[in-house]
Image 1 (cartoon, one colour):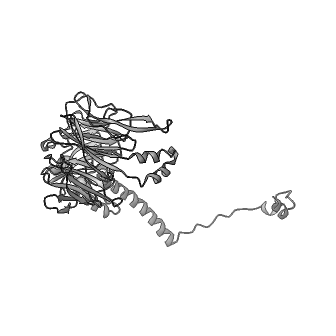
Image 2 (cartoon, one colour):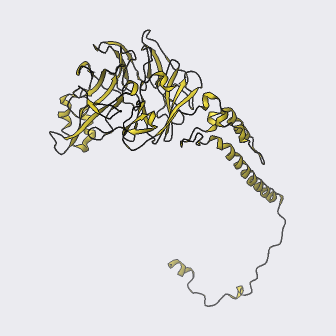
Length: 467
């Protein structure tokens, strides 16, 4: 404001006379130069070209979209992914598109025209249903961890239903379906005030229960968990369902004496103070018929954590148990193969951990293991191992994808002599497949929908169950 007054000290009192007779002259009409005309023509051509190419690309891109092709309400794989040749011709047409070009998307065959090996729709389609598991005579073919709960998949019911809660609600409770899907093993836990800190509640294991899906009755196993709040249990059952092995992670009393010195908001301080204290894993053999339980192995170590890998699995012939533990080298697992009744270690496979929930081959001699992110097949009788051939699907590799998204197959174990079970994730849809090693053959078996964090545990079923 001050600067304006200095520049114009006296305001005008009348309109300037020089501007009273001002007349605006119209510019002469001049023909545009050749350069301007060329630019305008190029702009028009680009506009037309863009509209044509957009229509061309849109028609070609339809083959890459996931649409519901089989009427189950779940988007299926894009047509271009299932029929590569047809989609390839459409893509070639798009790549050579110029003004006026068009792509014949009819060159992409429909679902009915596909090869039988790739056109067979999944046998079952299931989605998360909020109601608890109802009584059912069908077997539990898989358990799925999703949204903080464990969901049972009984194909006869066509849905994924959460298991009934036993004890305090928690997503840390382990679950396991017995061979053949005849029963489910569940943990029960309780929240109780800590003896030294009455205002602080801690989780305690109340026991392991066997749930019968036919009538939802529960029976407590003759197994007494150790006291303390830092525990973890994993299960496996013998092929005949009589024996159950429980892998229990536990802490000595010294851990609890040190941990009680820290308030809940001092979590990192407590971790540092207890980091050097020992962690133990004990294997307990539970005889459901005799009602007894005994420890067959105790070792100072821990179990590796994985979303869809079982750290303890029983051989199909019942002669051996495999368990994955952490070695003395930080971050490096090891797999022990032991005799069930005595706990004698028969084999130690360093640097590996069990893959999925069906790591044992039906011959009880081969194991699927993960070694440094790669899947290998280990033969116990010879001690040799070799990596799997590249897996079919997008980004195929013998390296296990984490997470198994974008069509990448994550192996869950043996399906039969030549094929493996795998799962792929696309958004909130997970597809269970059978894949043939060393080929591009992928057979979808089931599709589950409803969550983006689903992790499946397959149940050991007869081979003809999946036919």
